[in-house]
Amino acid sequence: MDPLSLKSLLLLLPLLGCCVGQGILPAGPVSALVGGNVTLKPLISYPPSVITWTFNGPNGVATFIGGTVIVEDAYTGRASLNSTDGSLTLSALTPGDSGDYNVNVITTRALFGETKLLVVEPVSNVDIKSNVPDAIEYNSTVILTCSAIGSSLSFKWINGSAPIVVDGTRITEIKTNSSSVLTIKNVLRTDLVGPIYCTASNSLTTKSTTTPFNLTVYYGPDDVTLTPANPPKFIQAGSTFNLTCSASSLPPASFTWYYNGTRIETSSSVLTLDMIKGYTKMANYTCRAENPKSKRSVPSPAVSFAIMEGISSVEIIGPT
Ligand SMILES: *[C@@H]1O[C@H](CO)[C@@H](O)[C@H](O)[C@H]1NC(C)=O
Ligand SMILES: *[C@@H]1O[C@H](CO)[C@@H](O)[C@H](O)[C@H]1NC(C)=O
Ligand SMILES: *[C@@H]1O[C@H](CO)[C@@H](O)[C@H](O)[C@H]1NC(C)=O
Ligand SMILES: *[C@@H]1O[C@H](CO)[C@@H](O)[C@H](O)[C@H]1NC(C)=O
Image (tube, rainbow, N blue to C red; front, side, top):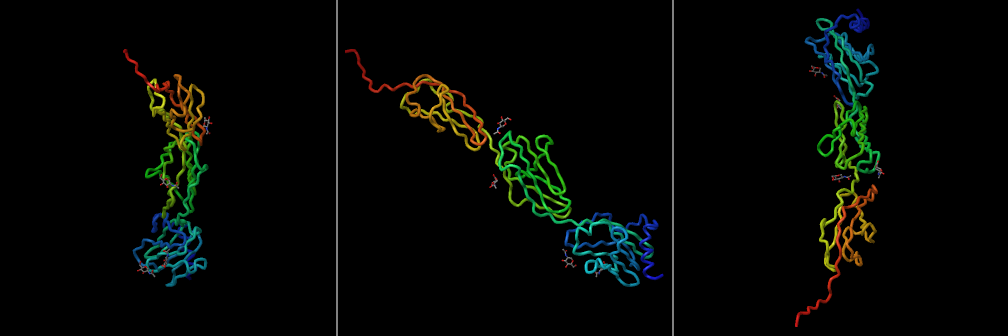
């Protein structure tokens, strides 16, 4: 039998059902990086007299027959067949090398093996983007997109050191092969304290965002309070008494003051007696804190007091 017809026969063997159940290659898929090398090695116990490797059906890769290794033109310089152990090495791998590899071997008998090769691009360029530059607590929907270059990617989100928990309602995630889109509705100030990282992986490589991602969530004003909350009913004019308004707010709140509902001309967080000269009657004092970003304005509880003019010169007139 001349070598070429033997080769044809070998290609027919699997079709004839000759060697079913005699898989001599690991099932796979075997993963390898683009540009890298892979060696597919059949499990055989005796030196082969004939070996044929094919790709995606009938496409020849390399053959060992009559003591000679023949590498198909398409694989010149890229494929080598080891006639001792029957292994096929492919180098300078491209995504086009992904697919099914078959080997037919004749040792003391005919053997057949099949496996899958997956040539993956290494992960690179992991990047997080946001739909907004900043957000307002309770109002904003923040959409973060993590993307990367590479094949068959899976993504993970980390906030600080803990994974971001997707609850499927307020926080949802849509995954594709090349990105993960995290949607946070009615964002809370605690959602994105960060630093936020995204990690992309495939079967061979893993990469994270190199710079931490932060997104400022503006909040407040909350807890708008006056100090002291219970001032004395009568306050001595000229004393050091003052009222302080405070609020939890980002950015810091601006303040306005009211005397029985009428605006007092100051924007300080501290109201001094000097600022309310001339107001002496018992009155309600309140402050409003406004967040300059969200424009939310929240009043404090009111306090009330009257200011007593000091008695400047006291003359004690006793009984003579
Ligand atoms: C591929 O194999 C060649 C020769 O065996 C070696 O020089 C080269 O470093 C290998 N490349 C990779 C990416 O492993
Ligand atoms: C071929 O395989 C045998 C057995 O695994 C090994 O000893 C030998 O070094 C290989 N030859 C080449 C050229 O890689
Ligand atoms: C993000 O937040 C962390 C921790 O609060 C801080 O150290 C880092 O500088 C911030 N990065 C940016 C880009 O704002
Ligand atoms: C936030 O949402 C409330 C209620 O939906 C709305 O009234 C308010 O205008 C929103 N604030 C901002 C700053 O968008």
